[in-house]
Image (cartoon, rainbow, N blue to C red; front, side):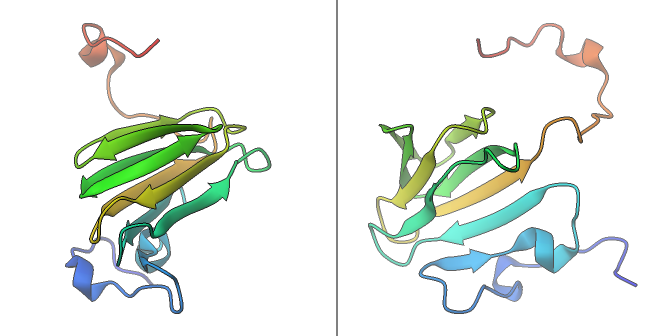
Length: 134
């Protein structure tokens, strides 16, 4: 039976063998099954953190958080540079996406899940005064 909770340093979480970057499969390691969670760390500038793909088959929405360094995202052929503490969201599954490290050590957290499977426990009233991106 897996533990009910866990706290680990990132260097304690194994990486995927033979990957071109340091890929920590967080959802696999912690036994999460309601959303995907992976952390990628570039060894060199130019390392591909996310291979070009879309999520048309899975309908998955994705959120990327650049934790350290800088990353260049490409969305349907348009590039966006994202320095540390930037967030990139891809709610539309058909958008082709990719990410490349702009410097060694660039670190990015990727989260994803198909729509409709998430049920927030937050009260909607808490967000009434918070604008949404339109």
